[in-house]
Image (cartoon, rainbow, N blue to C red):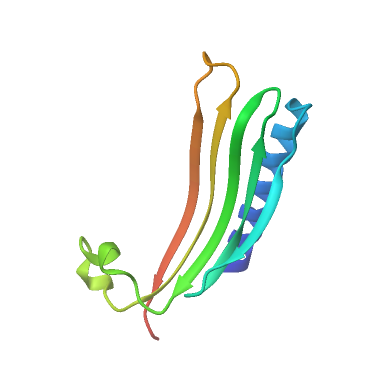
Length: 116
């Protein structure tokens, strides 16, 4: 099921970028794939100097690790010591028009696992 969530989120990133590029005649997204030394990675897409958008980013990440950080278990101590996976799509778009608000959105999936 994890791979289905990942496929959905990658397709969501593709769909969002494609839709935004249809209204942007001057600029296109540039992609940078990255890896996280502690586990995982993602792809960052940035659009700059467009006719509609001054700057924007639509990013996907999938990170994992052997133990949740203390900040994640502070409110839920029963999760301490569990491995985790987190993935999501995040976007921020800054329009050229100063009267149009900046847009920001996140779609996230998070799982904490214990042995057995």
